[in-house]
Image (cartoon, rainbow, N blue to C red):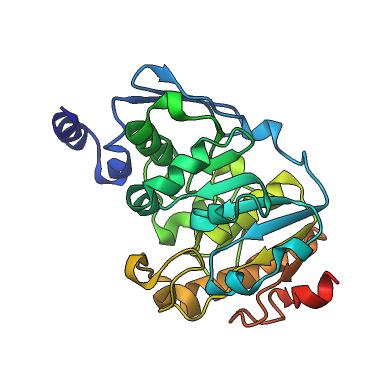
Length: 300
């Protein structure tokens, strides 16, 4: 039946709408004037979602952002001061050692290939999981709504919004020209940073870039980042073994897209008086983008 509806959708919608084909007609959404999705119904079931407006600027102070580079294995997390944490992808292996309150997953392949991690994440009643409509649909299909104890916060790729046409890279800047919260890099059409995630989040090939935009929107003022190595791509992530390592294309994107995007994010957050400490001392990200700090010295 799913294939049948996809065929109908393709016949009745132009190619720029193709990213919606697996959702129609099962997903129904309602948007607020701000642009965010405030109601999400999947197969006639109402999804438990928190409104992004209710989270805007609600928080302050320190936040630990946990990426998944190999350097995490060398950290003595017990020396870190108490603070809330945001995790991405497989970082949930640190559950019990850090205080996860927020989580971000936008890689649909991760949901498919690591269901055991997803199951633990959605069973955590203290978590707010930021993910896309496609992510919620995948989770419900795999585990059913009754298995979900966390709260969902719906986020969207600014170029692939639900039931709206795809925005081509060359058209992205003009499409957001009237949005004062979406700031583009001076010399790039494909690099932007938003201060208001309700109108969509800009991608840069890594979930950490999404997380930076979300945390800025939430209101945190001091970010401590672990596992943001951006090198040694052939090595397993801190929670993996060589035999179960998931592939990555970050190395192909690092120089031309990821690093310039992080530089742009750094500039934008400095303008908001947000401080960042990169606690991966061997990170390939330079000090002039995110200042490196040795956590053993910082948290004596």
